[in-house]
Length: 99
Image (cartoon, rainbow, N blue to C red; front, side, top):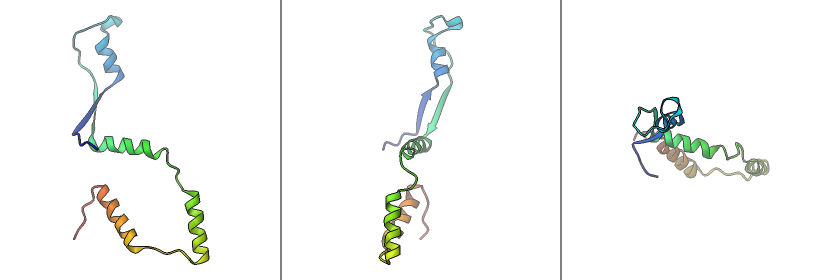
């Protein structure tokens, strides 16, 4: 992933304002335009939101498998794996870990 300080997008209104002048006549001169600047973090959040819309909220097959293991007394928790996932999550969201 590239770290860009800002991603700038020109709005449709601003784009059409630079393409046509008053009364809809074509204009080549530069006119002020509205722009929207997204920080790198905001752009990442937008991509994450788009990705999450395609993921089911609950993995029903996994829930069923874990329920079966619990019922049969075979479910085991890997404490090392859980701890590592917690650390990974904290670091992914910019958390500062205290030593």
